[in-house]
Image (cartoon, rainbow over all chains, first blue to last red; front, top):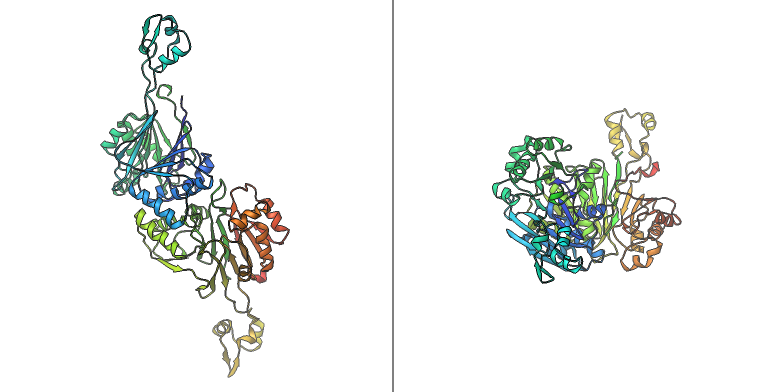
Length: 307
Length: 307
C-alpha cells in the first residue's frame, strides 16, 4: 500500500485571483513528490501545504509559459536555503532549462544540490521500480506536453489458507511466493499462481496541462483513475477556448468520458470566473464524477479495487 | 491634498512563509502607484489589495536578488492581459533589465505597453511636478540601492481674510496668488507672500531595501516622515545580520532615531520568526514610533503638520 495524494497548489489560468494561484499540482506518492508545473507562488503554496523542500522530488513542466514556470526559480532557491542536498530532476522543453540556467545567471544564485534536466519527449520518460511516467504532445504551443503517472501492477492478493493447505509453512517461503518466486515443499514444487490472485492494477493519474481536447490525448489518458484537465472556460467562452488552445469544462468532461476516466478534476480556471460552479454543472451533464479544484485542495486516491 | 497610502504586499525575507510573501511595497500617491521591489507573488498581492494593473505606475528595484525581482515577470504579463497601454517605468540595475529582457525572450511573451528601463544611480533619479525620488547606494550587494520619495514643498496656507482686506476679489486673482503669482488690484501690486503662510513641507518616505545600517543611509533618510527599513533579524541573530548584510530590528530603530524619522516600519522579516513581536519590542526600546508590517497592511500617511 503506497499512499497517493494529489494536492492542488495553484488552479488559476494565466493570471492569479484573490483565491487562486498559478498552475502547480503536486502528487505525493509515498515519500516522493511529483510536481506538475510550477507557476509563480508555488514556493508559498508548498509552505502552506506543508510539502517540504527536502523530499525526493521530480518536476514535470507541461510548457514554457510563465504562469506554469516562473515559480521554479524561487522554489529552487528556497530548497537551497533549506539546505537541500538531494538532486532534483526537472522534465520539460529546452526552454524550461534556459529559464533555470539564465535565471540562475541573471539573479546570481547558486544551489546546494544538483538540478538534472531531462528533456521531455513523447513516450515513457521515467521508469521507476513502481511506476512509469509517460508524456504525450498536447495541443497548446509548439513544445507542450501532457503527462501520465501509471503505477505498475502489484502482485495479486496472497491466499494464506491456500498456502497452508498446500503445506507451505509461514515465513520465508510465503514471502518468496508473494514476490512471484516458486518454492519447494517436501520435494513438491509450488507455483505463485497457486496461491496468488490475479495481478492488481496500479493507479493511473493524467495531467493535461494547457490543451485543446483531441483524440490522441483521449487515447493517452485511456482508463485514468483520475484525470486532471484544462478547464479554462465555460460554455460561454467555447470559441475562445478554440482560439486560445484551451478546453472548456464540458470538453474536458467529454474527453474524460471517452477515455473512461473514473474521476475528472477540473482546474486552470480563467480568472473571469469568480464562481466556477456553472463550469462544474456543464461538465456534470457529461460525466458523473467531477470535482472542481481549489487551491490547497488535497485528494487521496485509493487503489482501483477500493473505489 | 494628495492622498498617500503605503501598502505592504510582501514582508518576508528570502523565502515566503504561510502568511508573508516576498518583498514588495506599494506607495499609492493620488492616482499614481510607486512600487518598491516585486518579489514572487506580487501580482496576486496586487489583486488582493485591489491596486489595479492599469494605473500610472513606476517600479523601483532595490537589487537583483530573486526574492525582490522575480514577480516582475508575472506582473508585466498580467498588466498585458489586462490590456494595459500606458507605459511603465522600471528603475534598477542593468541586471534587472536583463531579467525582464531575457524573461520575455525565454518565456516568449509580448507586452501591450512600453517598458521604459531607467538605470538607477545615486542621486535624483526622478523629478516630477510634485515629488522627487532619490536613490543611494545601500550596503547589501555590489549594485543595490535604497530609495527616498520626497514631495516638494506645497504653497503656504492661503489667508482669505487677508486677501479680502487687501481688496483682492475672490476668483481668478485668488487662484493666481495661491499659485505664487503677484497680482494687481486697482494699480496696487499684491505679492503672494502677503496672503500666503510659509511653505509647507511635503512628505518624505524612505525605503531601505536589504542593507546594513550605516551613516550614509542615516544621512539619506534624514527627516523621513516614514522609514521602511530592513529588519531581517532580531537581537538573537545580530552576527548573522552582519554576515548577510542585513539589519536587526534594533539597528533599524537606531538608524531611524539618528535620522530623526518620525515613524519606522519594520519589514523583510526572516522566515525563522513566526512571531515578530520580540523584534518590535527590541526596536521599541530605541525608537518610540514603530510598526511591524504585515502583508496587505495599509498605512495612510498624513502631511507633516497633521501628525
